[in-house]
Image 1 (cartoon, helix red, strand yellow):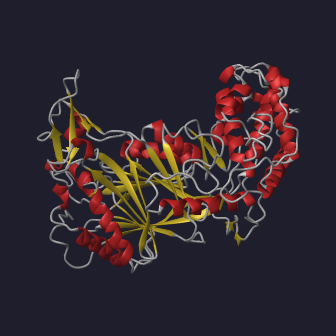
Image 2 (cartoon, rainbow, N blue to C red):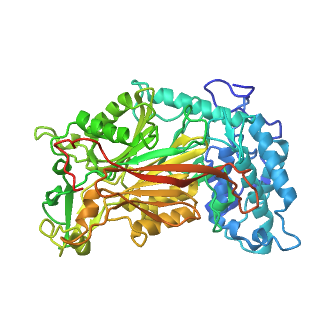
Image 3 (cartoon, rainbow, N blue to C red):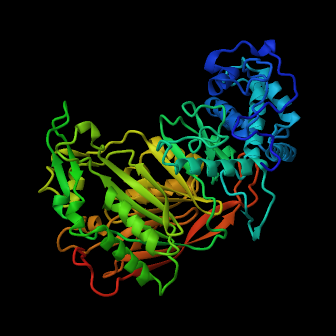
Length: 620
């Protein structure tokens, strides 16, 4: 294990020789309203494994694994709000504590820890200093509280620095100006190796579908922690640091504190192999379905108890799929890729909007694409799980209806990973929307119509797809509702967010552009929204000029740009270029230009050559 002091398949051992005997001054606490109370609540089994003498777990020694320490002190930071203290912001004051020597010390201590996988003695001493204030109340705003708050701040930055590069491949690092190979830390290697071990377990048919943990980290892929249960809090890698605002998220470069998996379960999808350069990323947006008939929307019998005007509706993908088979649909997409090749190649990703395909249909389409299209990395599409089952099948065996984003990853002609992220909020069609989409003959405009889907068991996937770069996919309302998924988006800051919509034209003045701007400002993600041509065309009254803005792009520090599908074209080909930028935390630590920022490099319409498939309805 490259010199690390772990034993195969086992937990961390106590590395430090510092005395771990109980200290009287930390025995008392005031529950979760005190510093020690929060530490105990986040680390209920103590900071370390019991030693060989059988001494029970305690909190006297500092955590041996940096993400565990980060979870504890980040929780204190968040609940106390210490990041907004005037003393930590007022760099113009003569006694400002976060000076150049502060940055140098915290960075050096973090790097020592990352290389040795053992907390430096100085970090042990700082932890001991914090425990002397174990009974301090976290709501204390008096000047005397600045002493323990400064200690917490320092431990937070040390833990963050120790996690530099965690969750990414340690093989190569990209600098701000050129590619350069740096010495990866032991912590990077350990985490990368454990993700590979978890992937091996996940693909084992003998393992349950929700297998958790690698050989070392028990909570992969949901959390990097060892001793912090994910039911309490999770820690995940991070890709962007907000350039605005004053929050906990502004204080770290490398790791993020996330809520319990009971709130929202995050999965960091590690990429062990693939692209080693920040080459352009080429996406083919196919705004299917190109036409949506009114009978695509179906009323559900009954009404919501106690609310006489609230009803439910469901979607019928069969209305726009026609007689298409999986192989024919895959061939249609492949023909569009071929039509795009005179402009560039390869196409790295194909993106379809919300609810474009039934889930089983999409699974088979992905298989055909993987086999037949070299260079394709990703297939992203909205999928419908309708919950229907044969009449003789018990109700408890019917899958719940869901509206999900499906992400398929390809390598060597195979689908190596498939992820299904359910929509977290239901669509509510009100009278204005029903009239706008010309659906009054199907759904009563005097009622409010809720989408019939299950929104329980909320998941969020973060997918690595380029060196130091991650993407996330949202489904429609999830872009606009802060809880629960946007808390994850803001904390991790994926470099690219793709929002799959069933919406009208993607114009700068409409709601998707407003919410895309929020994410582009904080945490600094580039955002691409995608809708179907069918819904865009339904938003125009007969005889009105047709809108064809089927996508919208918003990048940090750039204007929102509506992307229009040219008349007669069937897809949009986008090229995203990237550059490395330097970001800074609240205490002034730069990341050395290690943040990837995507920009729109080019956009081209793509028109399929020859006759369209007979099952495809296209309003050119």
